[in-house]
Image (cartoon, rainbow, N blue to C red; front, side, top):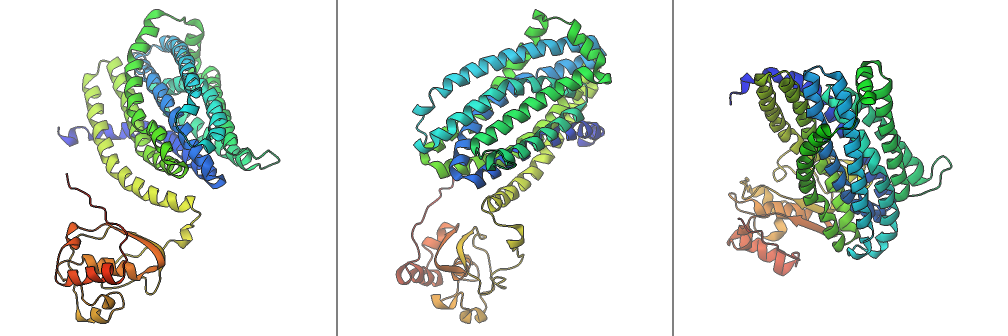
Length: 464
C-alpha cells in the first residue's frame, strides 16, 4: 500500500469527519460533565451512575450500530440522486429503529427486575433504580435521533448533527446544574436530577432533528419522499440485514467493558466510581475513530452509488491511514486526560500543579518539599554519576552507601523516600534486581528493611 496514492482523499474525509468527531466528542464532554458533577455531589451517586450508565450505554451502542445501516443505504441513493427514495428509506428506518427501541425497552425492563439479585452494594440500590428508569425512558428518543443523524451524515450534511449534539450537551449540563444541586429554586435531586436532565436533552435533540428534516428547504424533497413513501418489505429487510450484524458486533465489543461494571460493583462503591471515571476517558478514542469511520462510510457509499470503485477503494485506505495516525495522538491525550480528570475530581486546581523537567538525581527540583504520597516508575537500571558529593547529600547519606553508577534504582528509591512525609505512602515500580543484587545495593536494602522497616509489600510482576 503506497501512502501518497491516497493522500488526496485525506482532505474530503477530514472535512466530512471533523463535524462528526466534534459532535461525538461533545457526547464525551457530556459524560465528563455528568461524571464530574455527580462525583462532586456524592461518591455513592457516582458509583450508582457508573453501574447504570455502563448497562444503558451497552444498549445505546447496540442501537447506534443498528442505525449505521441508514448511512451507507442513504449514501448510495444520494450518489444516484434519488431524493424521493431517500425519504422513503428514512421512513422505513424510523419504523425499524422504533421497533428495535420497543424490543430494547422490554429487555432492559426485565433486567431492571433482577437488579436486586446482581450483588451490588445495598446502599446504592435506592439510587440505581430511579436513575435506571429515567434513562430507560430516553431510549426511544435516542433511536429516533440516530435515524435522522445517520440520514444527515449519508447526504454529507454532518454539520447538522454536530450542532444539535452540542446544543443538547449544553442543555444537559445546564439541567444538571439546576437539578443535581437544586439551583434556581428547583429541588436538589442529585443523581435522579442528572437522569431527568439527560432525558430532556435527548427528547429535545430528537425533536430538533425532526423539525429540521420537515421544515428546512434543502430537505424538502426528502421530506416529501418520507410522507409519500410507504413501509415496504424490501427496504425494511435491507435495513435489518445491514443493521443487525453491526449492532451485534458493536454490542459484543461494548459488553466487554460495560458488563464489567457488575463485577466491579462486587468490589465496592469506590471501585465502581473509579471504574466510571476511567471508562469516560477511554471513550475518547472510540468517538474519534468513529467519526472518521462514519465519514469513510459516507464517502464510500456515495462512490458506490456512482459506480466509482477507484474512489471507494481510495477513501477506504485513506480512512485507515488517518485512524492509525489519530490512534497515536489519542493515546497520548487519553493518558494526560486520565491524570487531569483525577485532579479535577478531587478539586485540585491547575494553579496547584508543578511540573519540572530535568535529572532529578543530579538536580533535586523539590528541595525540602515532602508529600503525603509518591508514585513513580523510574527508568530501570539507569546510569548516574554517583559522584562523591552525594555522600553528604541528605537523600542518600543515611543509607551508608551510594547506589552503583551503572544501576541507579536505589538512588531513585532513596530520593522518593526523602520527599515522603512521615507516615506517607509510596509505590514504586523497579526491576527484580533490587531484591537480590549485593554490594552497595545490599547495604541499602538492609537499611530500608532491617533498620527502617519501610517496606510493607513487594508485588512481583511476571514477564510473559
